[in-house]
Amino acid sequence: MRKILLTAGLALIPMIATTALAQTSSGEADPAQSRARPVAPTTPAERSEARGERKESGAAAARGPQIGEGQPQPAAAPKVPREERRAAHAKRRAATGQANQAGQLPRGGNTDAPERQ
Image (cartoon, rainbow, N blue to C red; front, side, top):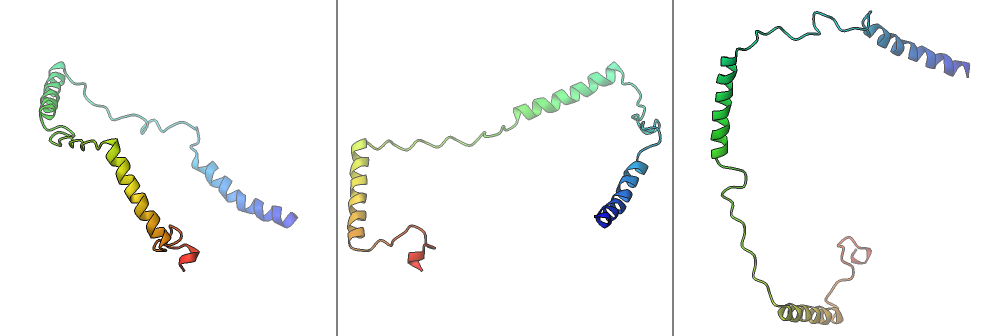
């Protein structure tokens, strides 16, 4: 038990020491690097000029092609009457039933099924 605790302690000491040494001495940010670079304040004329440029580019983008524009909606398929759908379903069921009775349908729907191997 002592050997396990001794080796675990020896392994933890470098991990704790590196995190302790990585911290700054005062715990505060470096004043020289914690602030943004000083920038000259913009004048109202510069701001209005920049605003005008953004307005022009925004208006051009709004007048340009939009997402989904030029892609027409597909036409809806004509509705098939219920009687025709029922007749087609009965025809398919009859064909499947005959194929099943003749033994033409394989057992199981999966190609990896044990009965197919």
